[in-house]
Structure formats: structure tokens, C-alpha cells
Image (cartoon, rainbow, N blue to C red):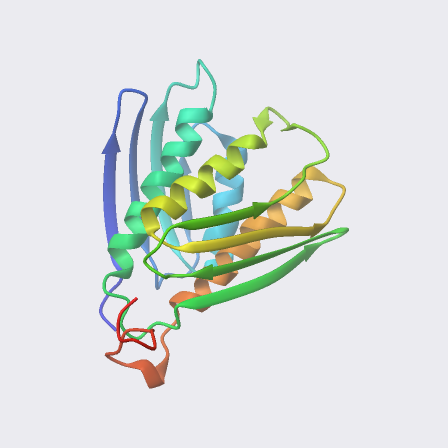
Length: 197
């Protein structure tokens, strides 16, 4: 399988973002976004997905984190789509259940070529520190729309908002690791019964 690395830069009126990804990395994350909680979550994705992720973002944080978080999701989706390429030889589907103390979440992903998000998470409070939990769905929607994946995220139980979010991001990383791994029996083939996604 060819090297699966990519860099994407995205500039808008509200944000300037650059992300480099290596899908076959060792789980190294470097982040400079001005949104510490999101950096903590993305570090879980890198570690559990064994993905090297270098992310720099500048946004209108003097207003709030909305544009920055959403646009990071969009740019991450774009860089994943570029790094994955034609998808030949990958497993395509991945899933993971991750617990953290009282919390348990499930993430299922399909590199389908079609965007779709099912997000079923009820947080017990609106903020984790200064971070608005509503922005997590915006992040995943941005990712899905631009990575062109089908993504199901379900928090099955939990009482601590931080634990819930962390189980989601860890499971997201692990599900992607499975979906993007090489399938020896699919070498040179698209992972679909019809020969195309």
C-alpha cells in the first residue's frame, strides 16, 4: 500500500487551518488551535488510531470557538479523503466500543464515499470547562461531509461529560484504525461488492 500522507490548508474569513496527516503513523499528535479541550480529544484520535496528526489553526476565538471547531472538522475530513485516496485494499468498515469508568460509547464508520452522520449523545451539562459540547456534533458533521464517510456515534451510558466525550473520540480513532487497515485479501480491489464504493 502506498504512503498515505496528505496536507490540506484551508483559509476562510474566520479561520486559517493547516493539517498534515499520516494514516500509517505511530500516534503522534501536534496541535496548536487555541481550543485546549479539542486538542485533548484529537490527541486521543491520534493515539488510538495510530495516526500522526499535525494541526495548526487560527480562528475568531474572541467571538467563540464555533467556527474554529467546525472548520477543523471540515479540514480534517478533507485531509483524510486525500490521504485515503482510492481506498483500494482497505477494510472500509470499522467499529469500536470504548469505556471510561462509568461511560461507554460505540463508534461505527464506513468509508463509503457518501456523507452520513448519526450522532446520539446526551451530555449531562452544556460545557466541559469553557468548551461548548454542542460543537462536538458540528465537528463530526464537518468531518463526515468532507471525508465522505458514514459515521454512527452512540453514547450508551455515562454521567460525566468529559468521560463521555473522551470515550467517543477514543472509539472514533480505533474505528478508523480498523477501517483504514489493509486487508490482505482485498489487495488492489475496492472494498465493495459492486467494485466501486
